[in-house]
Amino acid sequence: MKEGIHPKYQETAVHCGCGNTFTTRSTRSELKVDICNACHPFYTGKLKFVDTAGRIDKFKKKFSAAGYASLKKKK
Image (cartoon, helix red, strand yellow):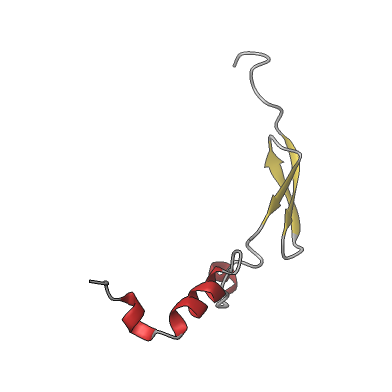
């Protein structure tokens, strides 16, 4: 390997939005993630909707009143 062209590989602290913290190795000193293995539905087995910026509520509000009629193509 050539000297001086590779980034520094170091211990990294990873902080999740759920409060879980663990260490790994990376070129960055600190990582902040939204979902980790302690809170992800695939690993926990619990059904959990990850709502980003209220998208689920916005969708429900938009289509709840009209029902399926709003999904049909307009002529």
